Amino acid sequence: MDSVKRSAVTPSKSRLARTFAKVLHVQSVTGVSLDDGIKKTKSHEKIKKDLFRNTDEEHRARAATEAFLAKLFASISSIKAAYAQMQFSQSPYDGEGIQSADQIVVSELKKLSELKQSYIKKQLNETSPETTLLLSEIEEQKSLLKTYEITSKKLDSEHKLKDSEITFLEEKLAEANRENRSLEKKLNSSGQLAIPDGIKLSDLRPSHFITYFRQTLKSIRTFVRLLISEMESADWDLEAAASSIKPGISFWKPNHKCFAFESFVCKEMFDGFNRPNFSRLHEDDKNRRLFFDCFLELKSVRPRDYLAWKPKSLFASFCRRKYLKLMHPKMEASFFSNLNLRNSISSGELPETPFFSAYSEMAKRVWLLHCLALSFDPEISIFQVSKGSRFSEVYMESLSDEAFGAMETDPRVAFTVVPGFRIGKTILQCQVYLC
View 1: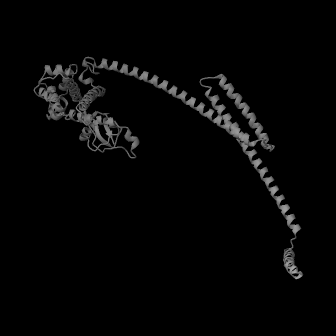
View 2: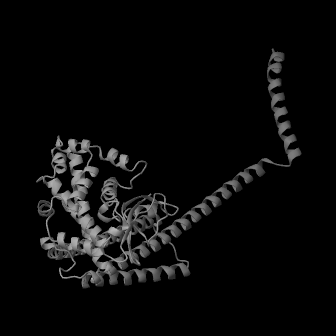
View 3: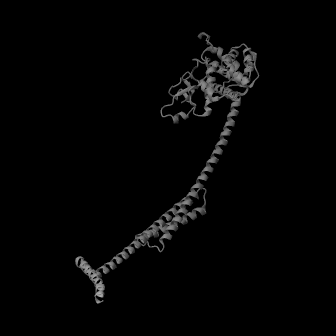
């Protein structure tokens, strides 16, 4: 029995002994005792506490610096807003606004001075830097918003001022237009031109021709507008019609298509301009006095009255011939659903229609311009510019200034709209469309 008990206790004691032996062996090898481990654990905890303490101090210093900068920017924004308010209050003058802005500027400058002293003395401590940072940012945003509001008010004020200037200029333009119309009526009353009735052949000047040319061009454009109106009433495709006259031309604006129709009318009406009576007569038939007398005779008479008075005159022949060439039968049938106007003109009758009245007025002006040109010595010659020519300010006037800003190279002539004239050493520019 005793032997059994001994055998049960002995192994446990031997295992415990072996464990103490291992511990003692480790201590002898490493030189570290249990007391040393406890001491080292305590010193590690102290280091951790020191690190945490340093980190908190750095965090507080960084927060204080951010709060300081936030106050600095908020103060600068307030000064900018106050300065903007001061400028805005000067025109129109607002004494209270200027005084209020001045007080804000002075107050913010004092704050900046205090911040400067705090920075020099390194006294940036804040009891609650997070709150200071937030409040400063809010103050800065308020100042920025105020600056934007003042700028918006200033722009609105400038906009109203520009509107008032535009209204004033529009009134002046309307007044100038009324005066121009009044002067034009005086010049053109009873069909009179800017050439006095008692003028002599030797008194003719280039200015007389230029003045009458402008009136002639005005009558041409009146007829072109009526022609386009008839096309629209007949449901014509104006773009296709313009392309058939000037193929391959890209117009800068949709309403520039009218230049194609104006070019067509001018080409037909001025064809043969330098030939006496627009016909192939001999050079000996050029009689300055004869053409000048013809000019004086017709200039004060309505076209219809003159055609009724002299139905077989050279002007009547010119008027019929140009109409039949200008107005194609299909065009006329499309406009009026018949060819009655064409048949009447061919037979020598005088139709009483707005269309024929506009045409006959234009024909009269072109005919008289022709007579006036052949009255000069040397006679006035007509010219036009071919497609692709380089633009010249001496000989040309552009009707499409958009080409100058859009083209990298010098713009070229797409087509001549209105011909030009040489009056001795004077050049009356032709009007061209550029591409």
